[in-house]
Length: 132
Image (cartoon, rainbow, N blue to C red; front, side):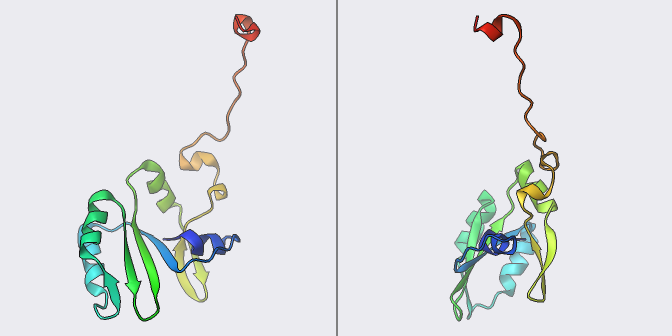
C-alpha cells in the first residue's frame, strides 16, 4: 500500500520527497522471496536491516542505485488500527499503474476505524454542577 508523500499528493496535499513509502504485510517466506527478486547490482539493501525490521515490525530501505530513489518498505504494525487501515486501502490508478493507496482518515466514519463517531459531552447535575 502506498503511503507517505505519494498518498498525500494523490489526495490533494502535495509533498515532495525523494523516497517512496510502501506498507507491506508479508509472511516471512514472502518477504524472503521479495528480497531474492531484487537486482543485487542495481538495488542496495541491508540484510541486517531486513532481519531487524522483521523482528520489530519496522521498516527497511531499498535504494535503487541507478536512479537514487529510496523505497521505504514498512512492515504493517500488529496494532488493531494498522490492521484496519490496511484492510481499508483502496486501489487507484496512478499514471496508468494500478496501486493500493492508504485512504484519508475522513473517508470512512470514525466508527469504521475503531473510534467513537463523536464525543458526547457529560452532563453534570446535582452537587457536581456547583463544584461541590
